[in-house]
Image 1 (tube, helix red, strand yellow):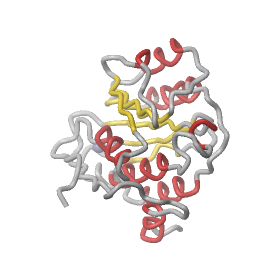
Image 2 (cartoon, protein in one colour):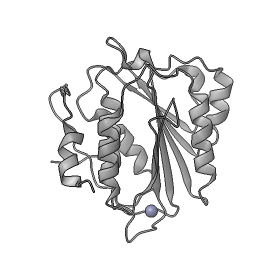
Image 3 (tube, helix red, strand yellow):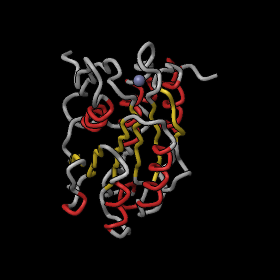
Image 4 (tube, helix red, strand yellow):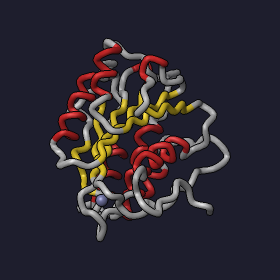
Length: 227
Ligand SMILES: [Zn+2]
């Protein structure tokens, strides 16, 4: 049994991780569940243009910060709706996936720490559509509620644009993150919020963007902590 207190420091500062920027952004409060339970699934790009030296995310900050945002939600659904959940997929799904985990369970923080602390960087697929189909399938298996998606990629994709757009429409809301590159115009849609993570962003900016999606529709939540 892994102890969360042993894993959390690794989540914050894994070996080789060099924080950039002047400060770490502190995440706010997750608040209470809204009228509907939420299911948030993330998809991360593990292709060479993202992970290689000179790529959009060579330090793997996307995993670290995604883990940080997820961990902040641990226990948030307890005593509230009890049905909110998160899942994390990669372009190479099912390789590197984190199966759906319930937000009510504080213990899932240790699973997340273990998962995101050990996800190998690979020269993975540049196709987004297969993972999107898997995410849509997971979302469809939930009984109602808000279906949210977070995609993190440099948008150097081999997919047909229409395949990606069609799959994005399976979700109520999409946070489209462009790693070191803006989200292309073709992926813009009314239910898609584009967010560009530039190289000069402070440590925690990606976690904060992800967290803002996780607290969508929640009551009394705050995006950032004042201290
Ligand atoms: Zn809930």
